[in-house]
Amino acid sequence: MLQIKLTSVMVEDQTKALAFYTDVLGFEKRMDFPVGEYRWITVAAKGRDDLELALEPNANPAARAFQQAMFAQGIPLASFQSTDLDADYARLHGKGVAFTMSPTVAGTVKVAVFSDTVGNLIQLHQPL
Image (cartoon, rainbow, N blue to C red; front, top):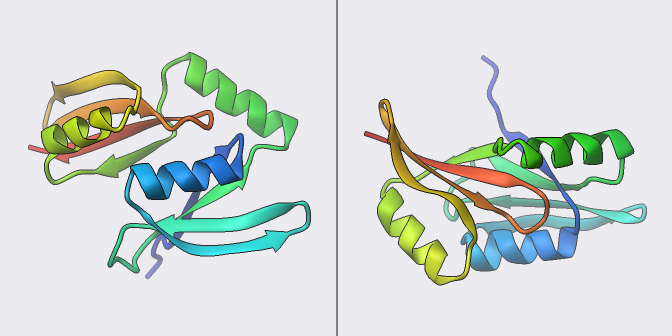
């Protein structure tokens, strides 16, 4: 049986991304070691070992162009599930996170979208 254990987002600045994803969002750092001129950095939800998120540099011009186009079109590149979206929105908004969409019911989920400060829009979702 196949499982998803690792996925990634491209980031403009790995150090800034690590600080945002850990200090602001509350994920914990799992790996951080040099790989050439960049770093292999992963984060995960605290206490969970089922999935890690790699914070990859957007050094490839095609990757950067894709990331910028998706941001300009308002399309999130990842979605994180919340058990209480309104509380997470209030907590993150209080930390200065810039939301482009406040909590909104969309069918069977409630969603919100924010900028991760390193080139991506990220969606939060809560099943209803």
